[in-house]
Amino acid sequence: MSKDIVPEHLDPAFIRGLTQKRITRRSALKGAGALSFASFLAACGIGGGGGGTTTSGSQHVNWVWDKATKAGQLDFANWPLYIDVSGDENNPTYPSLQKFTKDTGITVNYKEVIQDNAEWFAKVAPQLKAGQSIGWDIMVVTNGIQLSNYLFAHWLVELDPSKQTNFNKNASPRMLNRAFDPGNKFTMPWQSGLTGIGYNPKLTGREITSFNDLFDPAFKGRVGMFSNNQDVGNLALVGMGIKPETSKPSDWQKAADKLKQQRDAGIVRKYYDQSYIDALSKGDTWVSMAWSGDIYQANLSAGNQDLKFVVPQEGAVIWTDNMCIPVGAAHPVDAITYMDYVYQPAVAAMLTEYIDYITPVPGARDVILADAAAATDADTKQADTDTANSPLVFPSADDLKRTSYYRVLTTAEAQQWNDIFNSVIIT
Image 1 (cartoon, rainbow, N blue to C red):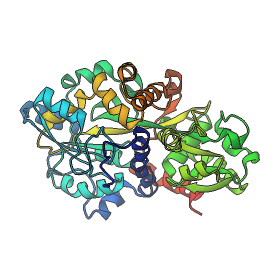
Image 2: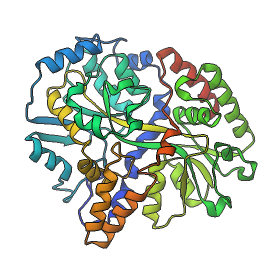
Image 3: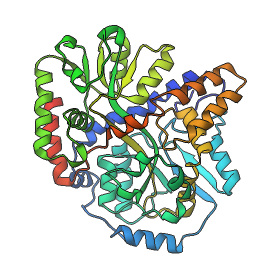
Image 4: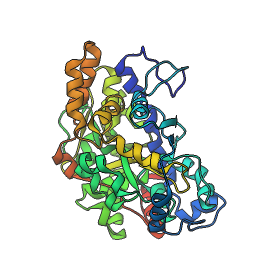
């Protein structure tokens, strides 16, 4: 079976479990965080700064939206297993894309070609630097080092607010307030997830409620921490009551010092990449830093509810995969038409029922509940009910209020951040 296509006959729980493969891109942040923008561009064989006609965001928006027209075609680059799919591996179909084509007349060339934020950036940066089209109208990029680099270089098209009516009406308030793209000028969220704490209450013997539980000597050798410095550093700041978005290098050092004390006391079993979920599932660790979607999917795959995910009382980190239009895109009107289209609750529900990450459209929940009520298949009814009622897919307003995005780093700050936090996880 192709790793990118899910046969129609497979159980819905298994299908959702397969999406664990998609989240493995999160481990790529470890390596990506070690590079400044200038050094990354140098590694790509190009100089720093923007190129071609991409000198400012305001010029992008004027040039694109004054002249571009609907073409009836859309080239969409996404991650594997990150959209609704039916059919078999030799003839896959995407119901939400078929609906989009029927409703708009726009044909979609959809490919799962993004495996890693850093690798994708390295692939497209030389073309963007040269002012050339990368061949895609929409690409999905996680907030963090690479997205900041696209923005610093002016390689993303500024969006036209008049073409975002569904977004403005239906987007979650949390999606309208993001430090890395104020005002949503260049990006629109695709799906999101949380970095918090996962644990097995059968092993911890109690509920986990605080960031400080990761430092409890009672769990010595049974605590898992992440091996990428963005999540480790940002969650540590949140846990210490410091807003990452406004944090300073002196705050970063305080957080790193606290993490070193945890490490040196032998409390940390290991600094994990994606394999943390296996360690937690097997009981090698009892409590661990965790991504919300992984806990949901691990329980579905195992057929039990042994693992729990919690937003610590101090708060959690939220990350977002974002739709954006690269400069030079051949079909920008078709692209923004689709980006706004998926902010209809009925369409967002189609996606959420398969993806099971945090949807940017809260109104999708009512649609999913209606789908569950109407379902005649018991497995589908249960799966939709579970999705609609999961706090990992539809977090409470209180939980979302206690989330912070990654600190947005300039080139100089990125080097400081890397030096400070890599000294914790790289020994």
